[in-house]
Length: 117
Image (cartoon, rainbow, N blue to C red; front, side, top):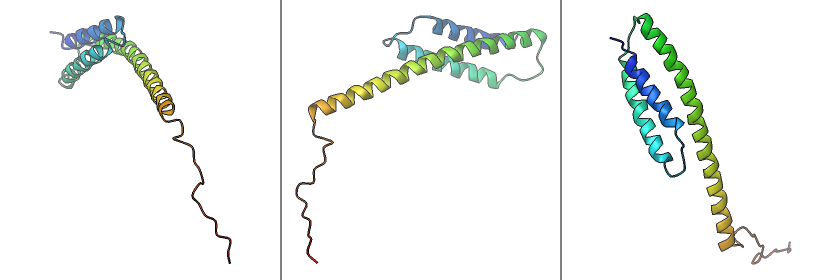
């Protein structure tokens, strides 16, 4: 029995999940599903020990290639989230400056300078 096959199947399902269109509405669900699959795969990888058969080595090489593609797609999602967070911070800042336009104005009113010696 090939011990690497379940790992390959999980990795393949991760790739298929990332190949689908990911919108702002379904992104959270996709990330949760990916986390579950990563945890499952991690548990299977912990129990994987040497020696490996030739079939397992070739399938392992495929898993590594798929994992590189998955990592690229996950980085794209991460970059999209970072851009959205920056936009939200910018909107929040502009909304605060609109509601309280004199928030950052510093005045020296009320100071008394004593010049006596």
